[in-house]
Length: 86
Length: 416
Image (cartoon, rainbow over all chains, first blue to last red):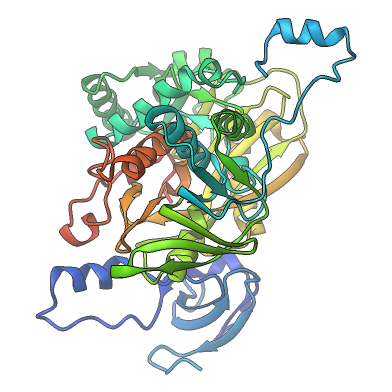
């Protein structure tokens, strides 16, 4: 798999750590147990393009978003935290 | 046809031309009482126990690829039941007990070899937590023995036990009834026995949708071989469970990861137990063919690619050589990965889903092979009776709302 840090460029896969699915909105304070469980544990887990967080843990330490295909591992987009998905 | 020495001798008179295919491969019928999606170990075992324990034989197992071509044929064949919590200990030890009688039960040699499984301790703290672990297992009625360094040396002399080892070994613990079984034979044995009882096994048939009737109840599955009606449907698809659940309109608390394994070229007997090292994150056993079978950590990012990345393979092999320096000249012959369905608490889900009439067996993560008989048995029970099996009761989807987890991460062997 080839990953590219937006700050440091293309680096070895072992420098990165995956932080799982991104764009998960925290429910409101009055959320029910079911909504809270859904937020914490239930995931789309798609076979296809997955939007996820990565951290250049053994490099600059920055977080960023990646849209990546879970079968081919092809990176479709790299974009900043807080940015809307492309 | 019963497999026996007598059948082999009789066949000698006819140049062994009397053997029949081990299971029938019929076209799907219009409808069944139960359709099981997934022809791996868990799905085939569920079909067998539906027929055997519950006399329900209008059953089809639908497999997208070939039997046991998923995780059943991609694991490292280890069986054990040294789990920490009572719910898991009961479930996994029930599974191991079924494995112990399975060759006879199925009339198919699954080559169960209870050569013992050694978990290494690398620090004083490891030794302390292992004595707790062993005591807990004794309370569950499961065999376990605490080992000193000399006892580890006697069981696995190929290990580097010198004080200067990269990860020094201080001791460990043994489950004597742990060991290995022939993974393909488990799938084939259940398939043959289920087919003999009337179950239809349909390969190269992919489920493309679920048909819902009154009150949202599932009434049929759409497949590449057409629509197949069903009173009840079960999903037993491991890493692809989320894909099937999405077709049925719900989500699961799963993430799919690639877990890789590899084998070296065969060599003479060098290791006659299973060794797992939490320190290096590697476990090793020697197959009956002589290959060293090596497993390790997950590729820690979501993946449906059945291959695994080079970076993880490198670290797994580095760990292997830290444990067994004498393996350094061995060549790795094959490397592959299975897609495992990892749950937050590393425990399975066996029971109903939000869709009426649709049941699921998933969430075994990195440890599904050892659980095949119990997973099949308990899934068959809920399919036949509509009630959860007693052993499966704690392993329901509700726990992700109630918070009543069975957090077995500590007993999963390798920290993922």
